Image (tube, rainbow, N blue to C red; front, top):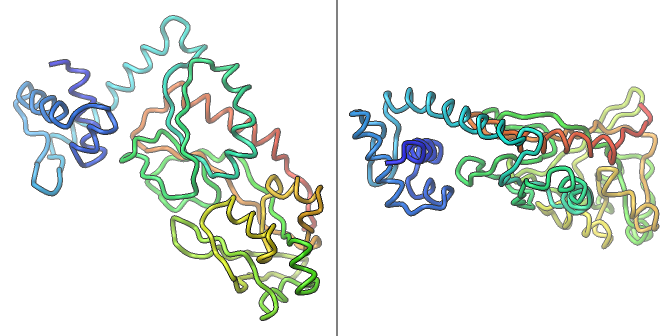
Length: 307
């Protein structure tokens, strides 16, 4: 029995709650993972897991052992990273998931510079706005906008998205130009709805101007759960959009979108990199997070807005 492989297999079973899921994330067969855990229990002479036909639960001894195992695995990773100059050049596979507009407009165009700096890091990138099971899917981190609702995750605040309100000229030609946000509640106006994957609810927009504070919900003809589809619906004239500046910039320059309510202020949307609480922050994850902070500062500078 390879003790490192056995400890790694045991840790993944605890984290995923399943021998099958652990095997998938480790790219091993379920039989191999089962045998490694059984051999580990035999060596320790302790039952680490309670197995039923439906689920796997960690025992009290298993929970205590798991806490030590993840520290040992982290120490091994640190030891390997520190050798042969690896600390200066992190290496390995990093599994990430990012929102589709952020990937298309910001992250992917900047990747050549990232790989020039860290040529030995291999990125496996999921591009979505969906909820991601970081542990079950063996994802190292996700980049997400908005306040984090999963308090079990560790998170690094990497920047803030400045927001504005926009509409396509064709939409405004049909409905007229709204002069006050409350007009968006009228029957003649429509918004494009954005349905957050983690809650299933439409996102309400808080707007401020001097002493006025209001929340705009509006009516929609279409609601989507993907940022690129949201933008496409607005460009097609299906309703008013609330967009981060970086998504609106090119379409403002081309005249495909026009700004609304420029004397109103919207609270910025925080951006986070989130990762599992028991996942060791490896050198490759650490440099990726710092790089995201850099590109947020360079490509999404805070622009002054009326307060």
